[in-house]
Length: 387
Ligand SMILES: Cc1cc2nc3c(=O)[nH]c(=O)nc-3n(C[C@H](O)[C@H](O)[C@H](O)COP(=O)(O)OP(=O)(O)OC[C@H]3O[C@@H](n4cnc5c(N)ncnc54)[C@H](O)[C@@H]3O)c2cc1C
Image (tube, rainbow, N blue to C red):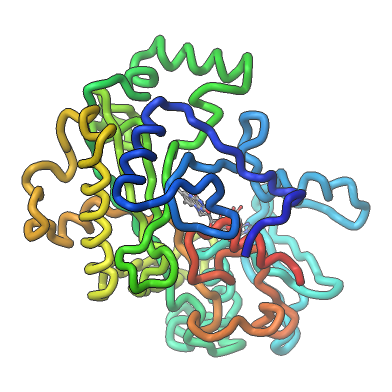
């Protein structure tokens, strides 16, 4: 699927905020990847600068691209600070939604249909709270079973990301973003020009590759960041502080993991967060694929002109220099959830129900709960928009 030229979600633009993007591209080309100027075009495979859905320095989200222009329509009303707490039914037909707003419970009734688009996690949670889900689970929390369906909350597919970090011989974004005066400088630059590092994504370069050539399409995504966040400042999450040295990161995430997890309510209270179990790397396929990918990542790092810019690998570091020492335990420790997707109510390997309506008059559109087997997930989720 390729995007249309004049789609409301602005054509992704390239940004090269760091002089390290070019050496990264050239090093990756030496491993056999070709330069790809448009991962959203006909070919996904290749390496290049990251494409960003950012317009005038501001994230061009689905809300900005689609909802904002539609706000002038007379037949549209947007309720904010509202938590959908339950789908209302007449028999097995969804007729509306109950929601909590400013402490008050309110109802909205549907003229034609109810669209569930609460994302991978909440779509399943909301269905379970509404009596659609695994019978045992619903009964455990005293929820009347309206439609028994073991697939609601099952088959969670969570793409896992792993980052490798190097200390560099040349300045990186860490040198710009760590000191207070650097923060002040980029802050002023952003306010005055809507430009500079704050107007961009954390990923500067990237790509897609296959871990073995018998595959017909890429199964790994590659990320390049001209900064690193290994050492947290006291009281801060590691991700928030650039390291006190010139750091550089290369990352990976699996496009189609076969490990599956689950989402299950822990209470009948919609404000209570559900239990999310990713079960990452629980299949041999996912482990072997990631080990091959990590090996490939190090091959890129070993190519010029990138190699001479690197001082030392910090994570995972010399301890796991040899392939045989790369254990999945260390990979699991380093891994983090990137893009969870969960099919809310059907088995993912089967075709989606026609028009993505799985229950009477209820549709899952523009939502990661309808697009469980892809990565990246954002555009595919948006493209499940009404048909
Ligand atoms: C850190 C991170 C990085 C990512 N990077 C990328 C990337 O580079 N490229 C990419 O393609 N994808 C990326 N993704 C994934 C991407 O964000 C998702 O695939 C996409 O947002 C899914 O869209 P969605 O509409 O299904 O869900 P969401 O975007 O999560 O939208 C669901 C909305 O429903 C609201 N909601 C949920 N429950 C309720 C409720 N009960 N009542 C009222 N409102 C509710 C939420 O507040 C939210 O606004 C990333 C995700 C994360 C977390």
